[in-house]
Length: 364
Image (tube, rainbow, N blue to C red):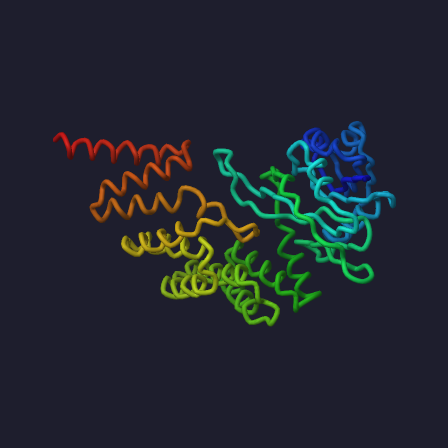
């Protein structure tokens, strides 16, 4: 079974050795460099990668990825698309080969998109950038995805539970080009609900509140917008935009809509809990965080955020219990929060303060 890794890069010499070490389990590594001015190309070639240099103008991620895919030899059976700031855990090829079956189209595997400051996992979801050599093409100028363009139906997607890919990006790199590319993507395919959602989210990131609200309301009205997780996310982002405009009542209304849309997700419950925390509505905080913590299954989608699955729910409960005079419950929650984030000095201070208060209450 011939496995080929392919990718695109520009000015990423700092990642070359780590990436090539990780990708060395493949039979071949091919890279499209899109105009590096540092030593990326030389270092990749020294490490054994086959590198083609070609500037993509105008820039589009799908164009670059399709060009890099064209560089993959025709006898490849499995294509593994990664970026230079991503690293597989060792043994990934063996795990992939164990589940890959004849006629398979894609593989889905675990992807850690971000890490918390203490090194623990942040946002985790499942990726599908491993695919068969023929019949696939990348689409969309940004947030590009694989589309089946072959004859008939694509082969089945296999689940590679044992494959883990970690993302360690360069924090200094700008995402400034994303907005223009997203606007282009929506202009090219205005009925693609996923890209409309992404565009509204990008407006939120840039604090363009009115554009965010209008775009995400359009997303919610689209006939293809049926995935409840993503619809709830749009509602949450609309709420955040209203908060940015200073309208807490509208924000609360949209958080409640998000909860009604996807009550099985922690995120909307926690968003409303944080709003109620700001309003010092302590009983509401306890109710919302309690509902969030009753959800114990962490979804395998990109919608799943880190904070609701970390120390935050217990931290907010600790503070709410404290303000309502329930010191013992506050201490219990403080300890739970610290156990999930042991390096957090503020959480450690909460535990120590509550333990002292409890000790003083018993031995004044």
